[in-house]
Length: 277
Image (cartoon, rainbow, N blue to C red; front, side, top):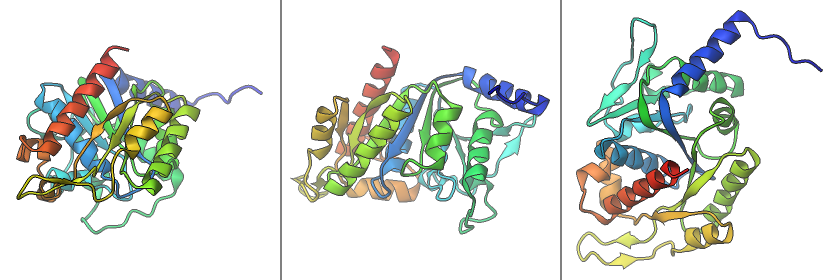
């Protein structure tokens, strides 16, 4: 059965989408099988670590109903403006990070977004084609948890994404859900860059001793069993929580911490992986 002919509006939209993506060298999709594993914390710290290394970096928050990224950079009160081409200008965070989130478009912080799948997909498309990302080395896409509408939309809109970073915690239930994200990536032909084990042991702020509250090693064992790269463990430190709530990622607020070192090492592995492809 022949495909229906595209309208002039559809053709223009596809052209704008391709034009926006053509200016972005690498697209990294950060996913998790379930909520509460620190995916947005991982996304924001990887993006900031790349920015600190001099890469022109974008961070696109497509958790439409629960956008947290603006809070993590203390930019939730910022407003978006359009340029002369009627494209939205993402919010700039020094040294070279551009951020786009549904949070900037809500009338207030407590507003609920009650959208079904097609509206979410339309918003995600607009985040790509109607935003003036400019020339980027990396675009980090912070996904909502799971493998629903947003995940399907992003792999359809960016079929040549460099790959996914899967975030999990050491608990068995989180590991189980992370395997579903890995299966999703395989079924949609999305390359997997690797797996991150977050909250991998508690670092005491007084004695610096590591206590494995949730155990550790489950993420590495899962990566090994599925023959994917293990990107690293991020310890659970009070400073990570404080930095996220105060709007300054830990790679900036406490660059000498174990967590900051882990995020920087993971960002380095991501760069080496995608640039040797």
